[in-house]
Length: 267
Picture (tube, rainbow, N blue to C red):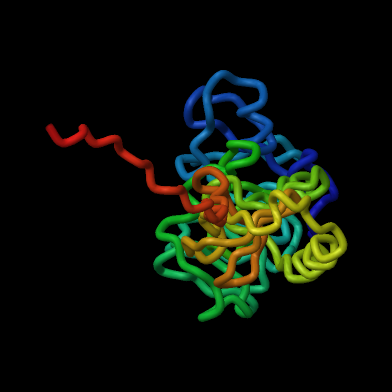
């Protein structure tokens, strides 16, 4: 029998899980965690209850009484029942991922499954997914929300990244590196600065900066619209110290006449 369109807001399945912690039946661990003051360990689930015939039985793909499939997809490790989303179980991750499997690879250093187009083409950060999302402070590794890999290698939930960009923020909350390709914005900033000369007293002023993108320390011209890194051309920089004005030329001094000294008369 085909999987029945039943379940909860999180998963399409035809069974309830018996929580090993409290013995109560819930359609999924997320429903359980929302109602209880503790969390369900999905890996410790031993029994399920069929939604069709209410038979309680060992966790398995099909109901032993009415033969209904509890889900198009079933993982006997995670005890995940759901409609087919090309899921696969990643052993190094320890959980199921949405595939298809051949579109993803597991990065050993990041300890995370990533899209194949990032293989050899991303900055590795050790165990990066074991950190919480720096925007919402929620778990990334086991989240049902996908994550974006930033150029610096850090992760944000896709929804958090979109929300962050809508506020005008463009830097990684963890390391301040630009979170996306900013080249077009830097070119616009170049034009704005070229059309907005500084007042005469600031024309030759310089400042020391630290670039958040290439980590360079350099001395650059001061401008209120932005401080451009001389190394990589980024305006994602931080001022390091105050303004440095060029030495002022000294005005020539008029020569002074030698002072005459009175000498006593001869005796």
